[in-house]
Image (cartoon, rainbow, N blue to C red; front, side):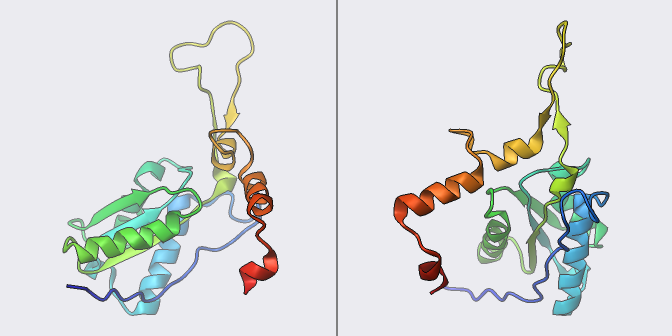
Length: 178
């Protein structure tokens, strides 16, 4: 039996230029800001929401790998509520909506909140050879934005991949707009 899913109260996190106005704001705080605004717009109390699905590609802060749960508790969802993080590259926010709907359809949730956030200005650098002791000589750190922006198979920037696909399949802006 089909079940209607109602989308209500959609909001966005704020946008800022790289390294500018939002660089000091933790990612889960951006997510909580949008989640609270969404609930306010929909006229829902956070403690009525029983599941939060959070889309995020690049965890950037201490709570990043658990951002769905961090956001849920920070917006006053019940401790008994559930949370799930999803990562599907550029489609993470859309996947969050799909996963939230699946929670409702499957009977695991009555009211689910779906969203996502990124704050690439806070992307850390990582050292992949330091954990067990670095060897003599210079050590390299890697910008995790490179992980997020590059195709893992050919190391091409994702924007370049989009341009190549546009050429390969002859996508034209006018056709996409239509």
